[in-house]
Picture 1 (tube, rainbow, N blue to C red):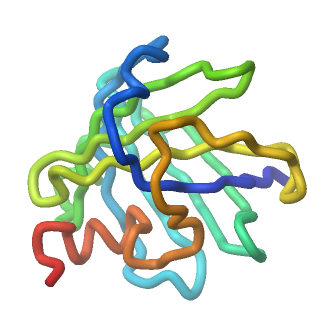
Picture 2 (picture 1 turned 180 degrees about the vertical axis):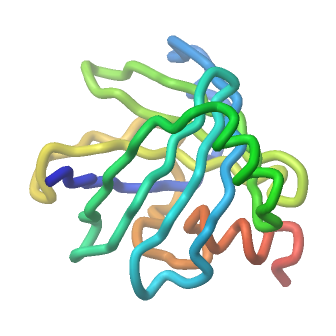
Length: 155
């Protein structure tokens, strides 16, 4: 069993850019429609397609199972999905911690979200200067919600 323990935050400035170690482009779509059960996602990173199954357990812990699938299968699935998001993902290293910054594109622009995966929910976390409001657990900021109701359509 794979557990994902993740906290998410909005960003208030560009100070994070000096910590970038890597960047990729992600396009992902959803085969599930709601957040109540298992979320089924397909993701393309330019190199490979992966299918992920996620389910919320408690607080900021989820089950997450992810599998690489053949490129042709991934292309077929993605071409038949309407609720897709695109984002640039930046990987950062700050005080021996790995952070991710997602800069959303298209209808979710200019939303930027910082994420950090933890080893347990009680892990001490020092927040970098670019962090603004914590959005962990706020449904409207989930990738599935952003695929269904983009940031640009919010009031």
